[in-house]
Image 1 (cartoon, rainbow, N blue to C red):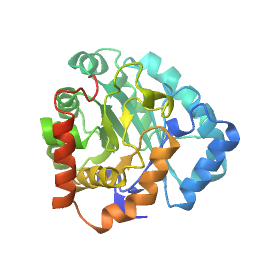
Image 2: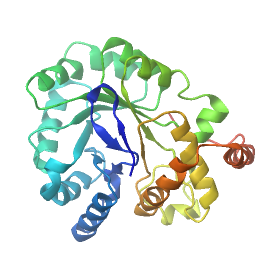
Image 3: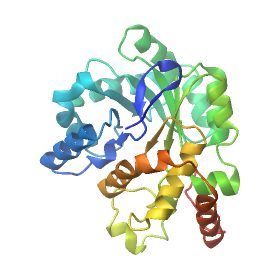
Image 4: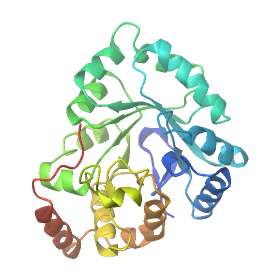
Length: 290
């Protein structure tokens, strides 16, 4: 497993991370098995959120023996300090931890989100206090709106940003092309979600939904190995620090098993040909809603 420095945090982070949704709705013994396998493969970054069903409960139990060996990241969709404080304490309890290595203002989707967060009584009154107390080591954001993310990082010196640097949206629409250099200029750690996503679901009746019930978007089919590796290489070529797979174990294990291959041979003409053909195939189709 390759490890990269997560910006100014100084944390050495595995090139693939464990998204807590993998543990969501799993039997506890299965969550334990997933986590043990991840650690055996060299995964050292685990990310979870209160909005992921019972993921905090399941993952928290699975991580008890390993807390001092891993980097633990959590999130909150709360925008006010009061609500965020309550969710923060609940997350600490469920995850059996005294502190979070990274704590993120989650799912910034609009300018209104930013305005509330930075306004009177907003969450940004709380997070620096928690960091000063040692309860949070690093403060980050996760976002689906590039404009909102850019506004947020202009208002505060965040340590990390988690964003969908997806092959289709970046290649076809330039999504993330402004945020990435802005984050790097501030020496922020850059975490990448949705690198292994094909596109939005084809409606509620999409037959693949039954196969991947924990994925917000349609993941790349692991059987389409060349496409999957090309998509991974594309995101890695942008210079992100880690890839966080979709929420099903099949996608997670594929990315873990192919990360060495993706890193060994850089993004090249063959990958470009594969992704451009897919881009043409999916032309006009939605990726995800902001």
